Image (tube, rainbow, N blue to C red; front, side):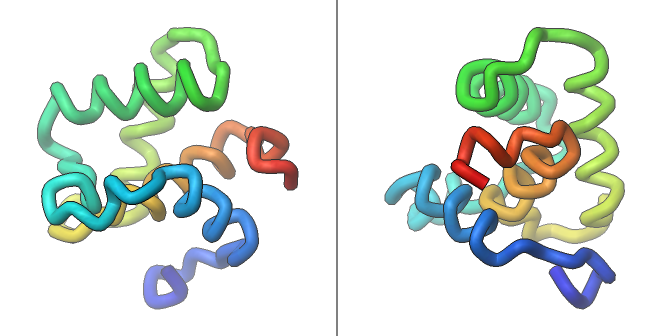
Length: 99
C-alpha cells in the first residue's frame, strides 16, 4: 500500500484480514475484480451492508468506485483484504474491528 502513497494502520489491516478467514487463501477469492459488477455487488451486500452494518445507498457504490480508483483501475491484483480495509476507513467503521 505504501507504493501507492496509502498510509496504513497495520493493526486494522490485520484485523480485516483475519475477519476474512481462510477464504483469502483461495486464488479466486484473494482478489476483487473492479470490473465485475456481480462481484462488486457481493462486496456491497456481504461486506458493507452485512458486516459493517451500513444501509444500502448509492453512497456505498460511490465508495467502492472511489476505492477502486485509488488502488488503480489498471492494477490487476486488488487484494480483498486491502479493498475491505480501505472501505472500512472510507466509511469510518473501524469500531467494527475494535479500533
